Amino acid sequence: MIKLFLKTLPKWLTILVVISFFFLIFKITYLNQLPAVWAQAYELGVILEAFITSFIASYIFYLAVVHYKEVKESYNFYPYAIRWSKGVVNTCKVEISHFSTSSGIEFEFETLTEEQLAKAFSSINPHQNNAPIMFPSASGYICGDWIDYLKSNLDSNLNKISKITESKIQITPEWMRLLTEIENCNFVIFVQGIQKTNIPGYIPGSPFQTNGDLYYDFYEKCLTLNQFIEKLESKYFVSKM
Image (cartoon, rainbow, N blue to C red; front, side, top):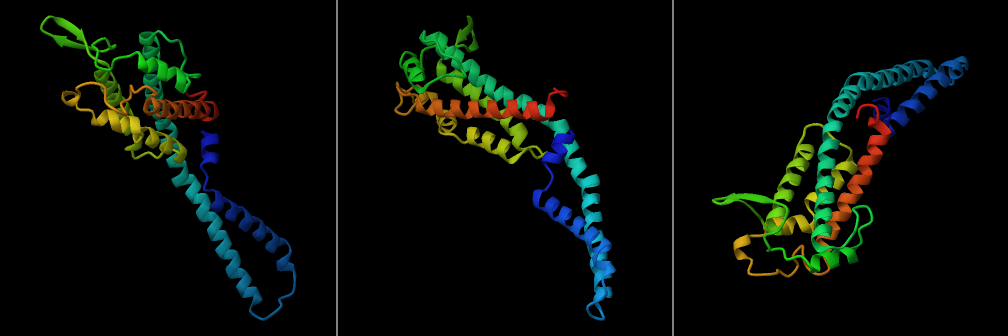
């Protein structure tokens, strides 16, 4: 937690406090020994010392009470936020694995290219009921199609993201940006807007279009989030996780 405490210190305020502290030491040890230049110089110096001392004391109070409390709350919340963020990434990993298996084209999450995804998407019918999702029916369970699969996964992902972004505990600005970019990317917007009853066939610009650029953009954002989470864990939460 010490690393997180130091990392989240208000930068410019901390710099100003450090400068004020050294100036106070310089004034007490050197300037106070010099004769007053004008009659009110001594009184002005006393006021200045009191102001600087009060400023430094206020900063220490802020660190001990406010900042420490915020960091402690974040430190306790971050493992849950990391778990939910990983859940978003893992869903993308599983989808890519299923795309690879269903298309017969081998690729991995960390090294996927847009060309590989395009080939996979060109061989998958999004409306064929062979996706890895099951629904109950009168005769048992039946497979849904790939639109069902993507919509179900997306609902789960958005739920995980909302748990983080709507929490009263603040996460880092970069983390928030990465989650927001996923939440608002074109793939998510498209899948959210799909109405299955209005789909007679392939839709122009669908996530299964030939070049697959909508999904690939989503994948790249998940990959970036995954890299960010790995760095975050290694810096602050190795022992806690």
